[in-house]
Amino acid sequence: MSADDKFDAIIIGAGPAGSACAYVMAREGKSVLLVERGVSAGSKNVTGGRLYTYALEMVEPGLYARAPLQRKVVREQIMMLGKNGAVTMDYADYDFGGEVPQSYTVLRAPFDEWFAAEAEAQGAMVATGILVDELIEENGKIVGIKAGEDEMYADVVIAADGVNSLIGQKAGLLGDITPHQVGVGIKEIIELPDDIIGARFNLCGDEGAARLAVGCTEGISGGAFIYTNKGSVSLGIVFNPEQAGRNGKKIHEILQDFKMHPAILPLIEGGTTVEYGAHLVPEVGLSAMPKSLYRDGLLLVGDAAGFGINTGFIIRGIDLAIVSGLAAANAVIAAEEVSAVGPLYAKQLEQLSLMPNMRLFAGWHKIMEIPRVFSEYPALANDALKLMFTVDGSVPEKMTSAMFGIMRRHVTVGQILADGWKGFRAI
Image: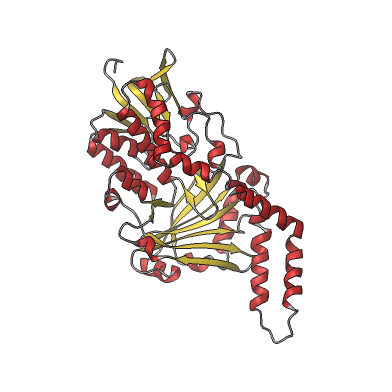
C-alpha cells in the first residue's frame, strides 16, 4: 500500500475503545482500518466485569439492546471478609434495571467480537491476526503503521492497544509501566445453572449482582470480585503487583483461598471453571495518565490513555474506553486538517464529560493505598459483628469496653484518625 492510497484512520486494537471509534467514523463515511492482534476481537481479553450502558447509548441510542450483554445489575454488594466470616452490604435498587438498565455484566470475548462486527457492518475494514511492529513517521508526524513487511497509511493512527500500549511508547507519549500504576487481575469464569445463580445471589430473571470484596488478599493492596452472568459467574482478584511480588504466597494460591472461604464457596460450589486468565488493569486513574494523549497524527484511547476509575466500590473502564473512542471519532470527523485532530480530541474528552470524571475521582485510589483497608479493617468489622451476635449463655462483656478492646487489637485511635483524614482528603 502506498502513501497515496491511505485510510482516513487506522485503529490499533479491537477492544471497546477501538470498535466504538471505528463504528462512528465508518458510519459517517470515513475509511477506517481496525487491526487486531488476536485471532478475533476479544480473543485476548479476559475482563469479566460490567458495562455501563450510557456509553453505548452515546455511540448510538438503542445500541445496547443489540449487544451480547449478560445480566442487568440491580444488586451492588460489598463484602469485608474475616478469617471465618463476612460482613456484607447488599444494596438492591430496581431502578437500576429500568427501561434502559444502568449497567450489565459482560464477558469481553463475545462482546468485543460483536462490537467489531458492528463496526464492520458500518463500513470499517476489520483485520485480525495482525501485530503492528512500528509506526511510520514522516517529518515528525505519524502517517501509518508497519506490520511485518506490510505498510499501511492513514491521516490518523489511533492507539487502542491496551494498558501496556507499545504504540504509545513507540510514539513517545508513554513511558514504561510502573508497578504503582497497574494492578494484576486474575479471573475465572465458573459455569453454573441460571436457577442456582438466581437463588444464591437473590436474583430474579435476568437480574444480576456485582460483588466486590476486601480482606482476601493477604494484606496486599487489592480486592476480589464476583459478577453474575448468564449461566456463569466471573470471579477474580486484582493485586498490586509490587506487593504481590514480595508476598511469599503465590497469586493463584491466594485466589484459591478466596474461593474456599466459607462465605464464598457456597456461591460457586458445584460450578465448573471454563476459563482462566490474567491481565493488567489501570489502577490509579488521572495520576497515571500521560501528559498528552496525542501528537500529530496519533491519538491514545481507552486503557492506552489510562482511562480507568476505581473508587473501591465502583470500577469503571469499559464505559470510559467507549467514550474515549467516540471522542476520537468525533475529532477526526470534525477536523478540517490533521493537525487539528489532537486538540479537537482533547476538547471532545471535556465535552463528553470523560476528563471531568477523571479529575473528580483523581484521588480515590489513595484510599486503596491505606494498607489497613485490606486487612485490619475487614477483620475489625467481622470481630465487632461477631461480638454483637454471639449468644452462648454467659454474661457478655459490656459492649463499649468490648468494642474498644476489639478496636485496640487491630488499630490504634491514631491510625483511625490518620486513615480517616487521608480518606477525606482523597475524595
